[in-house]
Image 1: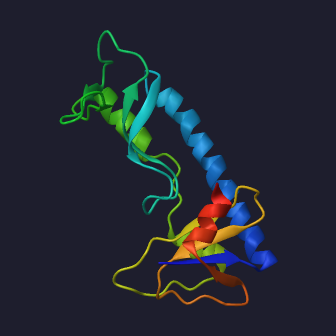
Image 2: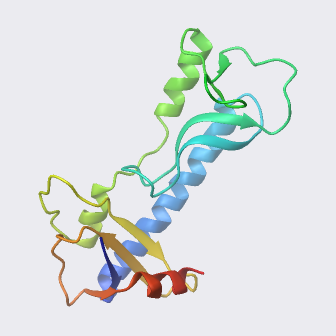
Image 3: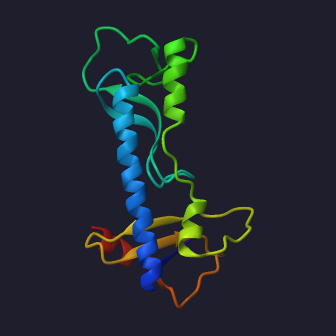
Length: 168
């Protein structure tokens, strides 16, 4: 894994626009979930932003914020998880909820390469790329594979310690 600070203004602006787009799409997903999930929830089962190929949250199940008297139609407790409810795909309502959840906005990791103007190396194993915006919003960091080629005029390699200090 390597970390780079984006030093080129045009590339920085493109990356910032991409991050803002992801934030907007994530908020849209959260709004759509209010219509899909028939109960208020506090946490979810799935993948966090930037933890997988999708740069937005992937949802699988939800923990109701309050104890429910009964499980809503089309939902069931997930085996092996005490409090998580998931759509019951054996019912029409559950299939519909699962379909709507699967149709939420997605942003695939490969879009990062296009935004940054980088040709993705064809590697059998690779690090999924991520973009991180500094707390003061003045710097953007790009995490990529150690073998990924980047233009050193647009990117400056930095340490993980440096990035962590800027994200706090």
